[in-house]
Image 1 (cartoon, rainbow, N blue to C red):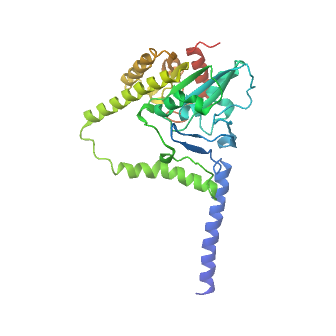
Image 2: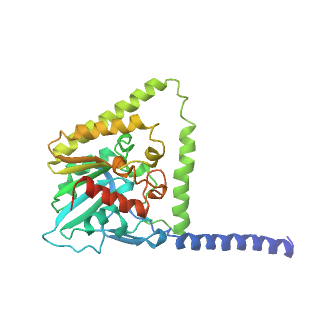
Image 3: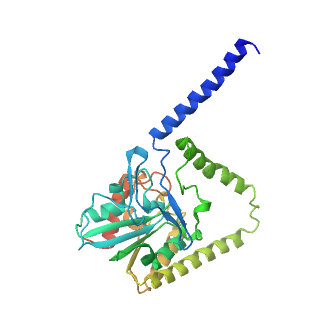
Length: 317
């Protein structure tokens, strides 16, 4: 092997190393490499680990308190304050691009010094995770809430009891290169796994049967949620957060909207449910494309609107 060949090999490996280093540096700059950590839980699936404080995308601060709730550390804690616990999925959690102070749960409490809001929104949670958490809250917290605000997204009722093993979330910090490892993990889960799964799905030859199974699944999920709420022996308000397509294709999804209205009405017969509200109607005339960052998750403006809608719905001062 001559000197020129050796030089070329060296340049190739050196270029790969530099490219790798630059990629890791850039990825860390945008907020990757220090993901929020979760822990497995046999009863409710999984939760965020306690005592985390991290800066993520767009320099947003994510604070998880000593019991695993996302909180706004700027809120003044008072012994006499009433505790409100928001329970939901990633919409309620807000994502790592929304600062603690910009969550609708935080904004909801800002205007009332007598309230403290704890956010138990968890990425990927379905109604079974939420229901089990509600009915077993005393296991997870020493605090006694004044009430719970349960925020449900259409589709949460199609998730069974989600487990951390089926999701791209971290139970311990990724190994170096941390940012690239986090990025690869997310890309594989979002793109490669669905492709592999789609290859194993048979053609739907019985669409009527599939539709009946889906409706049965949703019915069962809401019936089970009703029982979980009743067993919680706590005051619960139930909020439905609408997806973007309800506003942009309302005629097409009119029957789906009515279906969820019926589920909310059903819950009103539960002795622990005080109020229910479909935010679709409160935001219908005020809708803006900028309320969302994707089909379901809210922007900063969306969180502000949702906080006001929830206050209006629950008739809070």
